[in-house]
Image 1 (cartoon, rainbow, N blue to C red):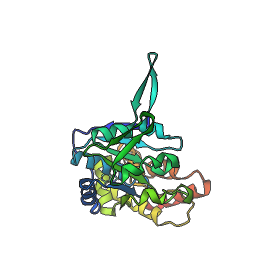
Image 2: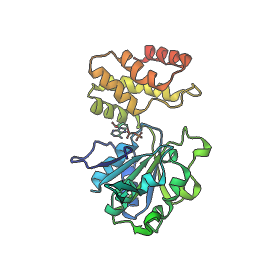
Image 3: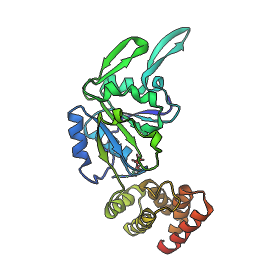
Image 4: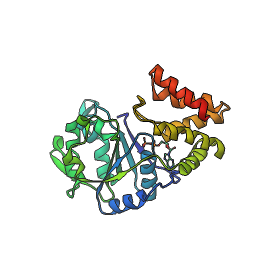
Length: 266
Ligand code: ADP
């Protein structure tokens, strides 16, 4: 399945702790609890899970959820192989068997019936029923279910079911404080501290806007993209226009407003 990846990092992924999230994650992991990461897109949730998997020495299986994702995509299915049907584990089953951290990114995108399979896994039972095989797997030691979602732009309908969320501990994420975000930007994009500071000031101004017609504000991810363009020699204004203003909105009026802000801040 193209939405799942198995990752093993040789070196510790670069992650700057913003709060006490590392301590909380480690405690929840040690106690076999499932973890819900809440926060806007592009604020560092995925990088955090990668860093924690490395720290805790667990393999990481990541699944990007989408509205076509079925239970079989997660759990596995019978496939035809040379005239024979063979069971092939899905990413969740693999993670359960090998005691990996299974990260379901943007879990609310998945269909409701898909998340039902997570219930017995997420609570004290730590079990995955494989109905098609007529067996129930006990999660291997080290298995940890981590899901992320963005509470900001999800419709109420798509909110996680209470019965799912009450089985998890929640860690709240937001964009890092300006001085931390500047540091991240300088490292990740390889730009000067002064350029990083300029981009962060601009992002802060966008994040302060209310009712500006933006579905998302400028994330750390888009700032890094702008920084990478600057590293290639583009001016801060051009980089911000293409990597920040462009992706954030298609509305001509909103884009005009953002470009005015670029003229002021960059
Ligand atoms: P999310 O999963 O929340 O959408 P990501 O983890 O993909 O966001 O973050 C986007 C990028 O921002 C990362 O690839 C990383 O370069 C950078 N980033 C964000 N927060 C941090 C952090 N605290 N430490 C290091 N890098 C960070």
